Length: 473
Image 1 (cartoon, rainbow, N blue to C red):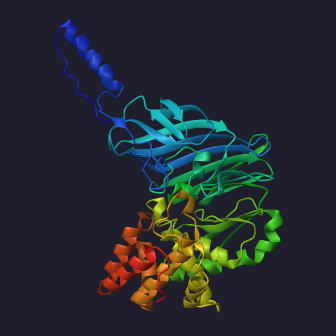
Image 2: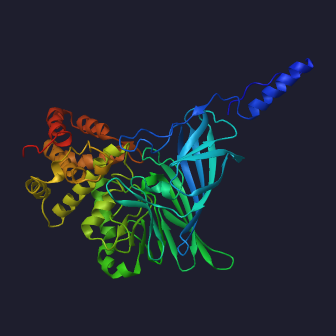
Image 3: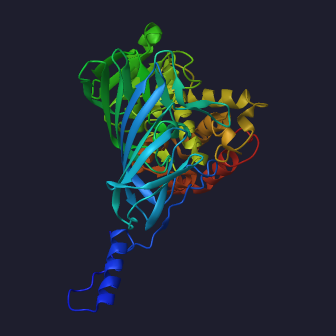
């Protein structure tokens, strides 16, 4: 942190000494940094107030305690971040919950709430490049958030616990943070629950500790690869858990609601097979463990590609497992820069299903393409281009999934089989653990296939950005 230079000691008039003392006092309070507030939102095309400017989070340490009986969550969130500008204040996203206190670099900081914005003014202003640590203590009953499309996320209560799901805005319901996919970080998530209840999260289980009187157990999970907050999860309940390894040695963690165990067993037994096939197809698996969380049927209205282990609301079939596991490459490792770029997640994961079918005695990808095209003449598939949903209510609509997959198939037909197989791996490797948008993708495909640039431009015009139903090729 930069400070104003101190005067050299020496004889000086009393008035000058007093002025120097005032200046030193101002410097000690951060007066040496001419900071400005960090932005209260990142101007995402669909969620302009989501995320915050002026800093980059590198690690979240979350210490949570949840009682399913009272529905009360108590948390301490420690954020390690680096200032990207001189900061007089900065914001965190937090929905509901009561903040008991905030410190920045171990000094008490002022904070105030306005909607989902928690504005923090540190005792010392923060200089650009300074790595600082913010601790937020909070508690309350976490809320369920309803999206513009009617889907529910955030903190979803179950009959024996809860499920924390984040896409696109839900993570702010259970911990404060910079909740935009463009700011990824590593995580340590410790969850204390009553004895008899288990807590699952992302990454690897690094510790299980019982309280002194045996009334609670703390499960600690560690995520060592960068993770966007919307794919962070906490699953609390009376799960049946299992730990194993794939033939390649990758740790596998599964947690299954007892009522779903029998129906899930056959599909979960194929999880190592799916991971192995996707590794051959998409390149090296990007994370240090895998697995699945199967909540009771109806716990959520959708499956979600939470990092390391997707969440399923009820027993999944193999196609859904293939889809969510493909997101570990496309969505979790290569994460969209903004929510406009969702087709880069869902188009790839949908096409993974087509490829799986093609290579496992099902329909060819061309047959899947034809079926999607022929049977969607009057459907919502052609309502808008996959790269340009009209609003936040439509970022998970069928054009993002089905037409997104059609874009990939048209690329395959344009550049050739060998080149497309290489593209599936090289794209994931080139942006591993980072963020990318649609322009990054189209530029990358053209750069890797320069002789096909003009033909690819037609694919972008008709299938990626074009309005209405393109002519069938």
